[in-house]
Length: 142
Image 1 (cartoon, rainbow, N blue to C red):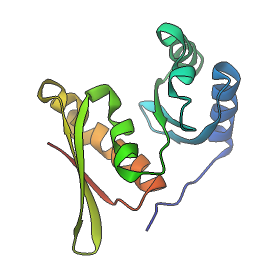
Image 2 (image 1 turned 45 degrees about the horizontal axis):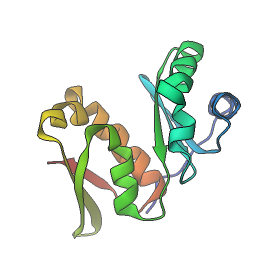
Image 3 (image 1 turned 180 degrees about the vertical axis):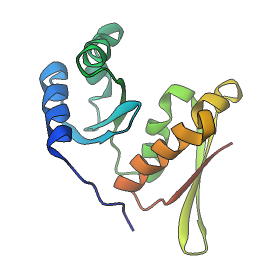
């Protein structure tokens, strides 16, 4: 079952600001204590980031939060790769484990710790954003 996407007034303001700065369409925004994760339409990732990350820098200065952009994909495997793109994903394996769907993403070994994050924070954020768009309830990094 997909996680429910809750859009608050504040999230709507972040989406409006993001779209104004990047001139792209955000299909989702997840507000976490440390960062904002924006999901953009397929093919708009590079445009959203801007030349040399200009849009991300501007948005960070305006919001006070780190910004992550994820390009949407209908394909669950590609979407998981897109979520982990800064950690150089090598492959994604999706399997059924009982009544849940689990994805294992293999990333560059030097970046594995960062992909998981302190106390698993980055992995939890990745799992939540993936579950908002695809029937994947569990995620691990190899």
